[in-house]
Length: 504
Image (cartoon, rainbow, N blue to C red; front, side):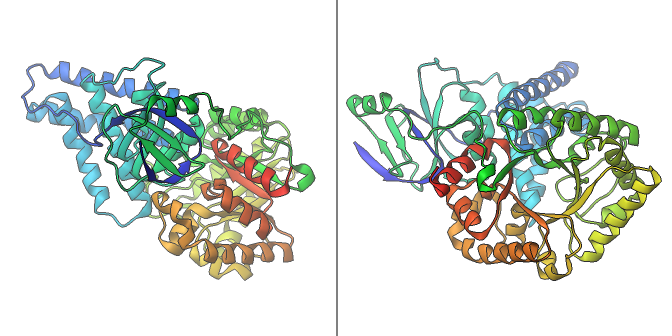
């Protein structure tokens, strides 16, 4: 038996047979198509199959990337481009799709944008999913035949291919907030990083995140010990009530269908509803009445629990087909005032329980915030609404941190660590696991924000996947953070950290 050290991304213990996966080792046909309609039908059916698979994944993981993948595949522009390659160049389905999808991948690979780098991984994963579906290439394993996946980088599709057989993952790169990590946490699959990925196929391997080690070429007796060992990490179905400690855990969602997890885990409410996803993959803007129906259903679902709607956050990786938005920020509200007006009025009309908060993203200056707040107040008066409404902002830009002292007249602030860490330290999702390199400086920034909010009696929450890292959760509690807004799949990790912090 041999052993290797590893970096832990998702906690747990796993044992099984090694399966080595090459990320992009896929079959591409180079033959000319004989039946063009047959090839187009194959593309249509493969897209539908992958979408169905992604929708199944959404039942166990609420992360927004699944919604993005589904919307990419439902985008008629993608289908149109593939059909063009089939009709005009007589390519078979796999070749036509590969040509089109690689155009996007190449475009994103040359970008310096953090958001577009994320989309690069999305398109690579979609490429793999669709090509494997077109080729009917699936790995079928018995329910009891547990496997350890070894790969350079964990694509979410790997977890789909092995479905009920994957016990653990070993990869060369990845991060605690990467898409693969979020799925592993949601499905309680241990996930570790290791520089040396040489493992013999079908050899016995044990991952033990307590010791941060991988044991390989193991004897059956050694593996048997782990088979009889109960996981040391207890994951509860419902989050404990930490009201005595003054701590609240809220959920982040992208659509109404995800709200059931907020109820399931007994979360305090919704800390972030990403409204831009209801606008995406449409050929026109939703009307005020259409938006009202969606927001009203969400408010009814949450009943008396607080729910924070972030106004549409478009630009960079999140684009709408019917308007142009190069960058995120207030300029999109100025450029498309009717879109903003319809959304705000729909939200105000849906505020039946007075538990709603409206939050503006990517704010840089107090003038940005006050401009949008004053418009919101104006629309509220036009509607004759007397309902109590709180208006706040996301603090997620370097400019906003530099202008922090000017944000005094704000109802609440949500500290968005995903964008903020990228802006301050150029940290993307795959690098968050190396938080030791920047966490001390980030904590100084967070403490500054905490003190500012205490001074001006501004409610503060932290919104970002970094809060789900137990070691950082403890640091945030030390700094005075008491409201955590994360994907419901990470709430268990936060619970464990809170229990340990307060010795409960």
